[in-house]
Length: 545
Image (cartoon, rainbow, N blue to C red; front, side, top):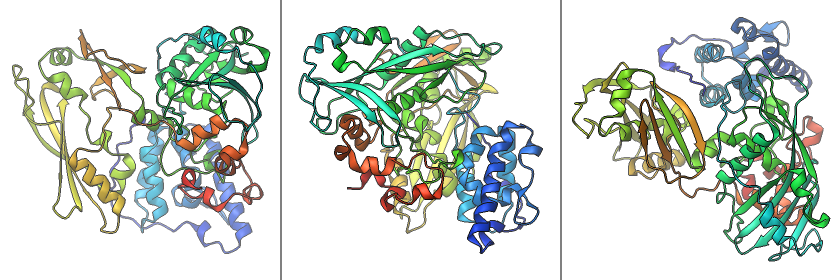
């Protein structure tokens, strides 16, 4: 996970020029200059990973302008920059942005995006997140495949009858899958044909077989079972992923066509629906499988040249994939000590509960903290006696001011430089009186209503493994490792409109609002965006009629 340790208060205020693109009156020239800047910003990382090259001045109307001052273009491609520029360069860019005065809303948004972006989604540090191996489901499907009557595209699913979906998604890509409704929910059958990439594996990369990737993919979809539900019944969708050989056992009338997916063994691969990185993990796998049933990307698309994509107000697995998984999907985290002192500490009473406790970074987003909170203030180190099970301070406390405008959050951590001690940090968050959403967030934190899910191991310990899926296993200490479960609760992974789109198949009238907004998800020219309904370009597009 990308760690950016940067605090605006540490740097002096120096006035720099305002972005000149915003001052260009000729719209044609303005579009050309901004386009040149965006192309330069996104293309540099393929040529160099040296900060001096990446952050060199970019083209201006006449001559060049400093990279950090091209804020209009930078805001459009900030996710691409965050994903593909090394962390050291991002920190330098953050420092340059902090020196610009006055600080504009655009600069604040860029800083927030750079601070909150998680490189593990697309970057070179993607983890291979293991999942429980699951059966294909073919035996149950064969038993259910007796009624193979093909129904009209817009006829509702009927109990114990199959419906094959064969057509195009809202954005034009082909979709092909079969559905069967029963008393337990809806089964969605996909035929996935994993294939080996043509290129040889990169040095140090262990080959992943077609069978192993299928097992991993099935396990990942099983991990989210119960989190994708039919909004009309509340019953879950179960995804049955079949190999071509298994799918051939189904009657032709309901047999989904094979979808080829290449397993890529290059060192650094950005996965997509047709090409999986060898170390692809569950969040990305689920996201990509959902493309096969017609869902489009909903994260900001400017970094990829998709200029009029609809981005929802509330996150889901097709938007910020890892954040959605953190909020919804159970998992087991195994942490590893790196020193004998740590190994001793985790064997003592009370320490593991303290280590796994959620803290402010698990309760609030980086976006919230950057916008409303001060930088942390350190608190004195306190000794924790070996025989004491209770910590000398709670791992997290919060206090809201009587007027509801100020929240103080205090965290205590075990000290990796002395595992018999804990130390604290406190931050203060303040809301403008008019910002009701900020007030609600702070009040929920203070009342203990803001659900907090531990994301990773306590610092000073290594993340040894990350297992997605529900488990009833208790916390366990084994030598220098500590495993614990995180169960977020029954929080939907997707918006109901997305599930309606899956169930609608190729019937547009059953999911018209989704089609209206999704059809331009991959548009790259202004002309393609002209027919997008205005509501689709607003943050609440999933909630439109």
